[in-house]
Image (cartoon, rainbow, N blue to C red):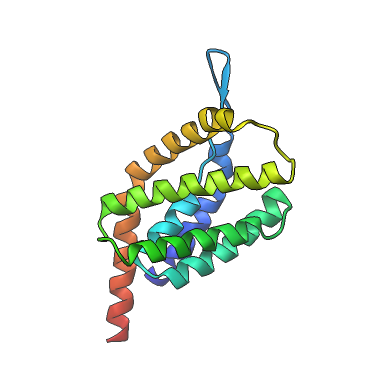
Length: 174
């Protein structure tokens, strides 16, 4: 049963993202702040760090394609970016120590890079006209704060489940 735990968690996170997205935008003192949950991306990076980059890239391709079809109608954007973030994480994790602090920091940096790449893409095709400074203050910063809170609360749980799956996989090979 533990064999299916990683895709099941990814599926639950895929469905939770739009639910938490309903809390956005927040209005404080007349300013709007947009929070974009990136739970699935953060989980995929943890899978890359603690389990296997190939599995994470496969999950990223699958869920990225689902995200493209159901949410943004631009086929290929998320199905390219999710595996690319996993690939970058896989290359970085080869040269650093795999502990929870490093994985959390790497996840937050790659999530910020992911958001900025989406902003650049949508600016390039003229789907947004938001200036960079407004993007940084009203979208990227609140998004990173919210996602870092989520990661601080559940990062250790992600690691525990992924490591348990890795141990179970190694025991089944022996």
